[in-house]
Length: 415
Image (cartoon, rainbow, N blue to C red):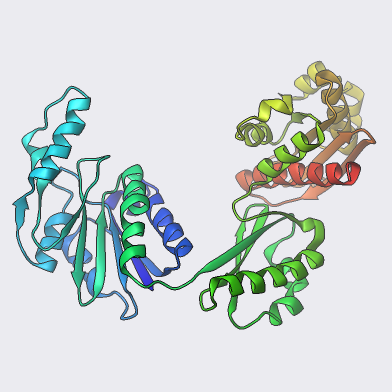
């Protein structure tokens, strides 16, 4: 079973809105054994929408359209689909009853514009949407099923999870898709490919490997679409055992697990806690750590000592140390780590200091130079990194590297 996604909306094309709906739809289809062949984004233009519908692959069984079902004149998807699939727009009392119920909850009465949303094509089956005023629509043409969904993300998510996936499971014969992802940190995609070349060349023909890089991370996803589920899981697991042995500490997690989530679990498991001193990362590490619910159990606090004065006043970094070595140095970052650990009385601490860029570098310390220190029960360790020239990527890479260095140190000290 194979699918395509068509996202509709000028706001997506001009960068005003991020298309999260297509990502959500693709993820749930893939999880349920449906392979997504391609995704298109088109403007709110009748001819372009029809062109996109006409151009679907002959291999496609399912088409998902998202967007363009609102009450305003620029939302033309419903009228375009009525023209494309035939029939006429007729008033659906059950849809209007849902609209009235939604408006009543806010003490309002639907306008005539909202009432028009209860007119739906006779050529479709209604996919009831209790969360919004735009109903989903299900069309069938040449044995291909088309689902038109509203652009509001939580409404699309509800319809996909609660209505459409169950319908697919009950009415269509889908294949078996098995995916397993491991997450690596600190090694570029090209270097990983070299390390894994022999392993990758020896993969069974039924498995596909995908490299999914992002700043500081590379996800490696193994997929099977052809094997029976239990057999696919066994084949993938056998290959992952080999890969984990090959890559070792480079791997920090699996599937959707984040580094900050894994680190939190480690800290809780060992009953230890953490403090952070940030300079070039500007509080980003602390932000990632506190994204995790329950992080107050192990994260005691941080100091964002961006200016040299803050390093001196809050972390007892000496003026001589700054003058002799500079803020971006082994000596200063180690002092920051030791002092923040002492100040918060924690088991471990992280400290960062660097040149995030794009300005401020020198011949000895070019843009992207970052020092990271980890202080723990066995003293303090630091390491110098050279990232790149992109400020945001440097901050993200430094944050991820800091957490990964701490992860490795904890695993080494608490075996």
